[in-house]
Image 1 (cartoon, rainbow, N blue to C red):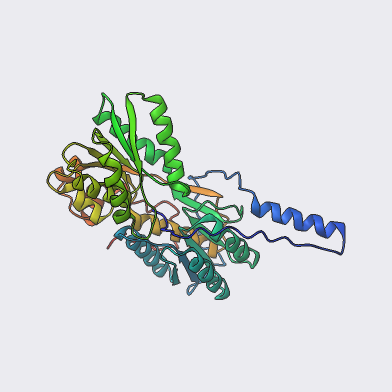
Image 2 (spheres, rainbow, N blue to C red):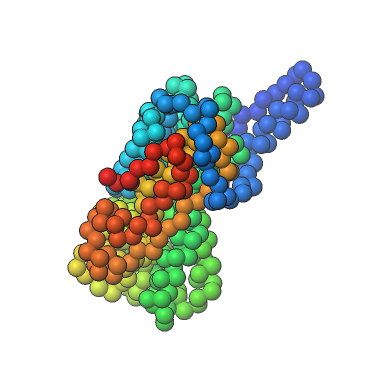
Amino acid sequence: MFAISTVLIAATALGACSQDTDNDSDTAKKGSEKKSQSCDRILNNDYMLPQAKPAEFKKGFTVALVRQSGVGDYFEQWGNGATKQIEAAGGKVKVYDARGNNSTQVSQFGQAISSKPDVIIVDHGLADSVNPKIDEAIDKGIPVVVYDVDIANCDATYISQNDESIAEEILGYLKKENPDGGKIAYVNVSGIAPLDSRNKVYQEFLKGNPEFKQVAHFGKYTESVAADTATEGAAALSAAKDTTIAFAAYDELAKGTLIALRQQGLSDKVKVYGVDISTADIQLMIKSGSPWRATAATDPANVGAVVARAAIGKAAGADLPDKMTIPATLITQDQLVDKNVENMDDLRKALPELSTPDYLGAPWIPEITPGQ
């Protein structure tokens, strides 16, 4: 879903001073403003890669995957989907995984730039850490595709899940299952782009549905999200025993919520609604007596493949849009049980809409089957 980060690094302001001419100074100032200000990105999900193979496309192209993965099989599936798609197209992948350390990601990003790849994929990370390195890569002529990081450089292509629709989807189902309202334990953290987007929808949901009241708020964003969220959640829930609903903004937070509910003896009294899906999540949802009622999600392997196709297009010289989003699907506990879904391969067969081979597909990029 996004990176696990423990250290916040303030962005370093780099000012270029010129003593030659006023024109040089103005040019430097304009370049700095372009990078420091957020883009007014235009969403274009209808974009298609060139259907004829671009002249710039060559087998043996290289991709640097600079990522912040975390605990859980979501990240493994995402990486496998991306790697499988790149290799199917004849490319090679070098992975730089900071595993939750922002300073390590900055250092590894520098190594990736020095390796002079044909394209760089940034998969999760803290905006303040990676934005200067994205600028550096683009300044050196290396195209960049970014997934789920709040980026400033207008020349980088930004791809994410549609976080607003994800939140609307799961909150709509929450309301459907609880038409009389309820007392909500809200499980989220701030400062992470996709989680902040989901939070905006949640806050609007509370304003528009006064029958729902928030009675607890917890969530930890560490290298061990589920365990640390469980510890904080148990304390919060002990003071909010009247909780009837929990909304967790991504799956590791949902896992921690399940543990906290069990510790407080509330598993049979609270319904849990989450975001994201993995085999581990499915097992938790279908477990007898599980309070995890539904999730809104994309297939992480499919998402990795989509981002990889964007990177392949960039490496081949395609002019991709500023922003693209990948739609999510509502997945309920009842669906999983009724369709005998036990893992992600079962889910892909039960819900084929999770696979989007035409999204940034082209005849010169071999189609893959995510997860297999």
